[in-house]
Image 1: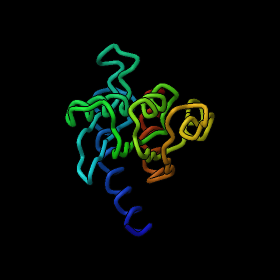
Image 2 (image 1 turned 180 degrees about the vertical axis):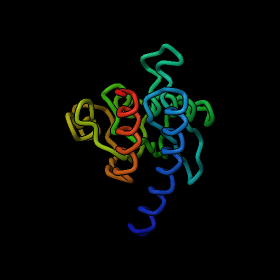
Image 3 (image 1 turned 45 degrees about the vertical axis):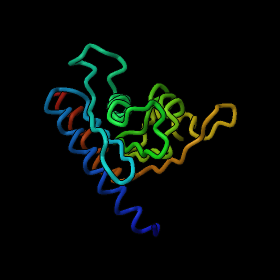
Image 4 (image 1 turned 45 degrees about the horizontal axis):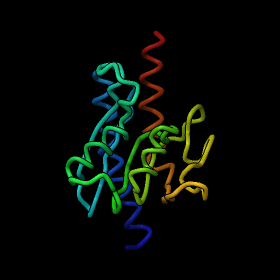
Length: 156
């Protein structure tokens, strides 16, 4: 697949993650959404539900990976790409390592908790048992705008 075609697909799947982020915002959750794609098929979608579920692990990408494992009937997510609107934190990046994903594509960088290049980069830490490809800045402005709009409204 050409680099241009891959970029178009990455944007297509990120738009689905943005739909999930908007669903989170509609529920009063921080607007972060995620999808997991395997063999060009969306196998799971999720958005933040920490407030709703009273669960500190209910991050969008964490829930999407759990959903993908259940849908695929396996814990190893080899062959899968996780699309998420905000750069994953250490917990979610750690799960990506443990789940053996192939790629993570994210929208906006997270200057306060980003673990795939901003504050840390666990995706390419030779001390760990797995490495994966990371692509950032896919629809970054749209992803960041969702977060800015949400927090601006919260402060009013």
